[in-house]
Length: 121
Image (cartoon, rainbow, N blue to C red; front, top):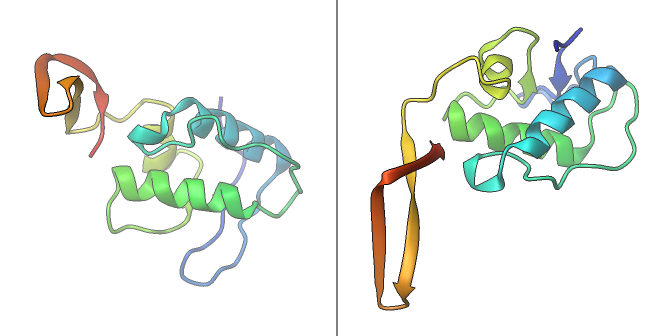
């Protein structure tokens, strides 16, 4: 699985990237597979795909993913083979982990530090 060209929109100029339809479908599928609590779209992306134009929802999901894993970068697009693409397909490790928090009751949450479920923050 790979991209032919950039997907998204240049955050600094607002200019759309190439946004081939098949590339948009690939990025949408991958972002939907990442839970929202880990910077992904959590299945929320869908709708019509227009060649050459990434939807506002897709652009915002890309920015959210980018801010989650690459804070401060804010390019607004996913480059074929670039760091965001490699993170999205799981080729780049993430330095921080998070753990399940189980609420026994509303007054005393219990943190299970041995139950690693993913990465983020």
